Image (tube, each protein chain N blue to C red):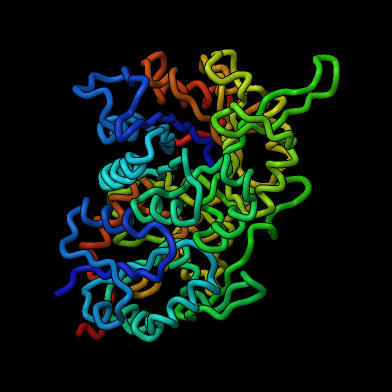
Amino acid sequence: MGLAKRIIPCLDVNAGRVVKGVRFVDLRDAGDPVAIASEYDRAGADELVFLDITASHEQRDTILHVVEAVASEVFIPLTVGGGIRTLADIRRLLNAGADKVAINTAVVEYPQLVTEAAARVGSQCIVVAVDAKRVSEASAPPRWSVYTHGGRRPTGLDAVAWSRRMAEAGAGEILLTSMDRDGTKLGFDLELTRAVSEGTGVPVIASGGVGNLAHLIDGVRLGLADAVLAASIFHFGEFTIQQAKAAMAEHGIEVRR
Amino acid sequence: MIGIAVIDYGMGNLRSMAKALEYVGARSVVVTADAETVAHAERVVFPGQGAVRDCMSALQRSELIDVLGQTAAERPFLGVCMGMQALMSVSEENEGVRALDLLPGSVRHFRHLSTAHQKLKIPHMGWNSLCWVREHPLWEGIEAGAWFYFVHSYYVAPADERLVLAQAEYGATFAAAIGKDNIFATQFHPEKSQQAGLRLLENFIRWDGYARNRY
C-alpha cells in the first residue's frame, strides 16, 4: 500500500454553469455544478478541477458561489483555475471552500506571486498550470515552450525549466497540459510529462489528450505522472472512473478503490 | 452553548471543515479565533495548513495558546494536519520552532525519507491508505486500509510510540493519526476524505473523550 495515483475529472465552468455538457449520468440539469460534482464524488473521482472560463468581468464572482455550493456537499479536494490574478483572488477562492488554486498567466507575468501566495496560504494550495507546446524540430531533442492566455500567447519559456522554477518558488503541484494533444484524444505527450515529472520535486498532474484508458495507464507508467486529468472520456460516459481505476490497478498502479 | 469550536487562525480552508461537521449532524459549529468562545465549546477542532511558525504566531496574536491546552485536557479535541503538528513539542520547520508541546515528539520534513534510490515528491499529496495500530472509538465503522486524503511536507515523529493510532506509508512508515486522552489528531484531512472521513467526523461528534475533569 502507499500513495494512490489520482484520477481527476476537469469541469469547465462559465458564469456558474458547467459547460460543454456532462452526459455521463442521467442528470436533470446537465449544467449544475453541485449535481455533477456529487456524481463524480460517488463515482470515485479522487479530486475535481473546476476551470472557470467566464469571460465577462461582471460575472467573475459566480465561481465563488459554485465553489461554496460544491464545498458544502462534496468532501473531496477541489481545485479552481482560470482568471486568478492576485493574492486576494486566491484568498477569496480558498475562503469559499477551494483547496487549491491553479494559476497560469498571472505567474508568468509576475513569478513572485507564487512565492508570496505560498508564504501566505501554503504551497499545498498553489498549483501552477503549465500549458506547453512542442517547439523543437522532429529530428532535434524535444523542447517545449510555455503558453499563456489559454494557449494563445507564447512566452519563450522552456516548460521543463519553468516547472522546476515554479516548484522551487513554492508551487505545491504542477498541472501540465500539452497544447499539442489537448482535445485530440491521442493520449498525453508522454515525453513532456516524463521530462517535467523527473525535472521537478513536486507532484505533476498530466493533462491533455486522453482518449482511452490505456492513455491514463501510460501517463502514470511512462509519463511518471502523479495524477491524470481527463474531461470528455468521463463526461460523455465513454468510461467510468471505476473502469479507469480497474484498468490502472490491473497494470499494477495503486489506486483508491 | 457552542457545540464545536473550529479554531480560526487565518490559515487554510476552514469552511470545508465546518461544512463537513454540519453535514454529519453537528449542531452549532462556530469558526472562531475568540479564546472565550473556544473555552466554552463542548468540542474543539484545530485544523489548518501552512507553516508551524506562522501558526504559532497567529495563535499567540489571538491569545489562543492557553485555551488550546486547557480544552485539550478537558474535552474532545481533534487536531488536523497543521493542527496535529502544532500539538507536538517542536518542529524543524523554519529552522526550528517550539510548538504547543501538548504531546511529546517532533515534526520532521519528508526530505529525510527521500533517497537517490527512492526520490519522493514533496508534498506528500493525495490518497493514502491507513494501517491501524491501535483501537480507538473514532475508527468505528471505518475499514482497515481505508483511504484518506493527505497533503503535507512535514510529518510527526512522536517521542512515545504508544501515541500512534494509525500509520501510512510514504518513503517510510509515518504516524497518520496519534492520540492521547481527549486528543485525537490526524495528518490526513477527514473533511476531504469522502465517506471514511465523514464517518470519522461523525464518530468525533459523538465521542465523549476520556476526560477526567469535565466542566
